[in-house]
Length: 352
Image (tube, rainbow, N blue to C red; front, side, top):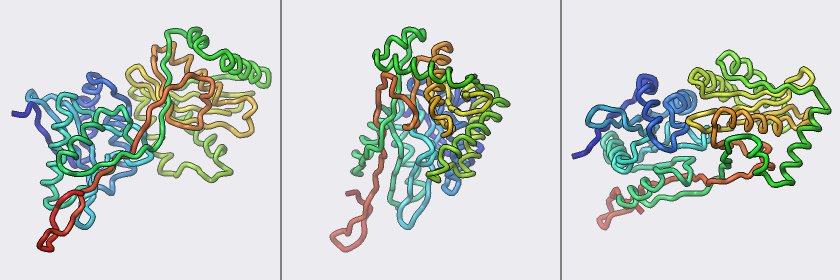
């Protein structure tokens, strides 16, 4: 007899009705991060995936305690149903499923069976970008699909970088190679000779709201030549998600002011002893004072003082050359059931 029950929720408001139980559950499982919260997944779905049917599988144990969720978004196309994460591609590099590890494989199996009942006879087409190589769901998905005779594929899509922090900044400095440590110190001293610098750390919803105006202005300036600017929809998403996260004390925004001008901004999230550097932007006219390098160093100092023990970096272009980074790969995971003719010329639902 299963030790859990599965329930299907299709109304996006379910993310908010479940948020207290869901968030409490994340405090109990290893590897939790802010991108597994109902806040992140729910807002991402509403902004970017609402053209797909929400298929949120909620897991509860025999005592009716919340023990996981499988947030999928479905779309029926011809004779197959597309299964994707409720958070779409390019919004986040941490797609996963918060599930009690005891039930993970069985919950994923049961979730696929529920999709099959919802769309009887339809072939399954699965695509999950991006799943980290250390994801506990990756092996479970591969094993589950292999048992069903469905060939899956994982395609390396990039790498994420992180650093572990000591208990004080002095130990951190001396963990750097001498050349990098000297260069970092010279960069900061030179910047302070050039301009009167003031670093601001914003955390309240009111501060975050004002700081986002600064970040978006700097991002537009930084990308002016390339034309690679944020869409109005993505700007609205960032503002919504960071305001909601700031209400939970999960968001921080660092701004560098030089001679009265805001020249750099860094967006970060904090969750369960980790900081996640989400994005940064700087004024191209202020590059000689290296705003993002100074802000990264300031974020490290602040993180250590707040008891943060790991920083994970989500944007490739941030200045991290001074630091002893480790890396983890992430993949696009996909699988598809394919029809082949039967000996009698009929199409059968089989996998290749």
